[in-house]
Length: 446
Ligand SMILES: [Ca+2]
Ligand SMILES: [Ca+2]
Ligand SMILES: [Ca+2]
Image (cartoon, rainbow, N blue to C red; front, top):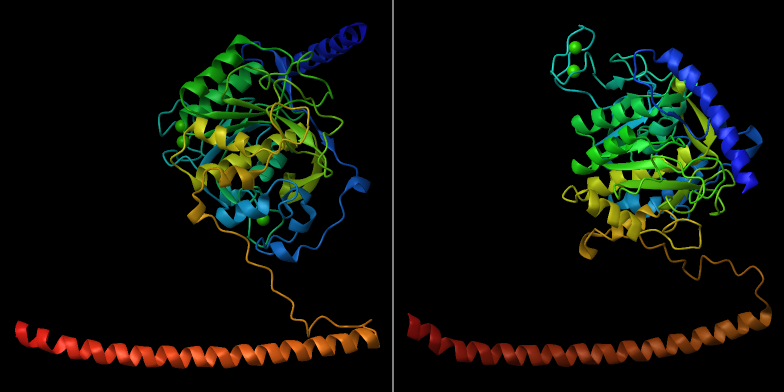
C-alpha cells in the first residue's frame, strides 16, 4: 500500500504542475482534470526492428511497409487476411489528440472534409457552431485549424489510416478512411478532460462512427463520463489507450479507458514478441491488447518516426474497426465491438479478452462464401527440387521407383482408354434409342 500511495503522490504532483500549464494555454476553457498522451516516448534508434522481406504481402506499395512489423503477414494482428477482404473505405473516424499534420502527404488524402464549410472566411458556413472547421476543430486555441504542434496526434492518425498503396511512406491499418482532426492536447501533449469532452461531442455531432483517444488521465470527471455516454447514445465507439504506467488498472485506473460504459474499448500495448509491453497498463479496463512498441508512423513535417506506448496500440484497434465498418456498413457499434472482441486471440495476456486479430474479427462477420483466402502456394515440381545430395543408392532406388510408377501409370492409362471407349459406345447406343423414340413424338406434336 505505501507503494501505491507514493505512486499516487507522484501522479498528483505531475497533475498539479501540468494543470498550471494547461490553465495558461487554455485560459477561457472551464477548469477540468488534466489528461496526457500516454507515451511521448520516441523509440531509440537501436530499438528499431530490422526490415524484413515479405514477398507474400507485396500488395502494399508503400516503401516502408517492411518496417511496420505489426502489419507483416498474419502473425502480429492478422493484417494480411484482413487486407484480402478490405483495405478501408469512407468510414469517419475522429482522432482526438494533439491535432494532425494536415499537410502530410500520407495523411492529407484521408482527411475528413466538412462539405458545408468554406475555409478561412471567418464564418460558420454550415451552422454547426464552429467557424472554419474544415477538417476538424482546435479546442486548445478555439479555432478551426487543428494543426498538430506536437507530433503525437499525427503519429496516431497514421497508424489508423495513413494512405496505403500510394507508393509513399507507410500504410495504416486502414488504407483509407475519413480522419477528423480534433485538437485537445497542446504542444506538450497536455490537455484537460473538459477539452476531451468537447472533442467527443464535436466528433459525435459531426458524424464520426469511431473515436480514437490515445490519452489517459487519473480523474474520472463527470463531464468526461457524460461525453462518453453521449457518444454511446449516438452509437459511437471510443477506443482509449490504457496508459503507460505499467500498472494494473484495477488498483490505478485511468480514464476514459476504465469507464464502465460498454462503448469504450481500453487497449494495452504488446511487443513484437506478442507479450505485454513493460510500459503498458493492464487488467480491468483493458478490453484487449494490440501492437504498441516500436511502431513506425507519420511525423510532423511530412516525415516518419517510431514511437512506443498504448497511444500506439489504441489506433491499431481503431484502424481494425474502420476495416470492420467498411466491410459491414450495416453493423452498429455493438456489432462492430462484438466482432472485434470475438476475433481476439486468447493467449494469456492480462487483459479482458486477448490480442487484436483483425483478420479473425472480419472472419466473424463476413459470410464464408465471400471470404477471400490466400492464393494457394505454388507447388514445387520434383524436377525443380535439386537433388544435390542424392546418393547413388538413393538414385537407383528412385529410378526403380520411377520405373514401377511409370508401369503402373501405363496400366492405368490403358484401363482409362478402355473405359472411355465403352462409355462412347454406350452414348452412341443411347443416342440411337433416343432418336428412334423421339420421332413419333415430333410427328404427333406437329
Ligand atoms: Ca462550421
Ligand atoms: Ca467558414
Ligand atoms: Ca502510404
